[in-house]
Image (tube, rainbow, N blue to C red; front, side, top):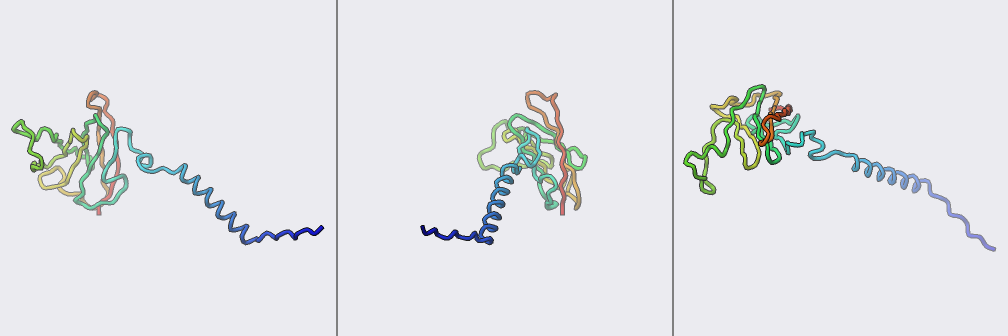
Length: 162
């Protein structure tokens, strides 16, 4: 009988195949254990997002925003200074809602929007902080469920301005 000669294994092809397989396994493992989005931010469950984020660099005129899940109220502090807070729903003085698209003059305070459950602050003239000086800043928010104001929690983070 005539046996066909065995093909020799090409060492270069074997090595390349093993490298590709190893890379694919590492990629899949990394994708399974990687943290992204809210999981990576270490935010409390009640906070959906913050801006600027922890350790972010922003411009000195940047707005500070904390976005909560439904049903929370808050007080905002920047560099240890409590920002006086104005509720957006209290800005209507005539008792009627402004017309769609109408402009509302916002006071130089932190603004709590009960419709979106956000608190925000923009440094400006007349505010407790007129500008975010260059360097490190600490944001802190005290927050509580609207229906249970005795359950106060605190979250702090740092950000930098250029």
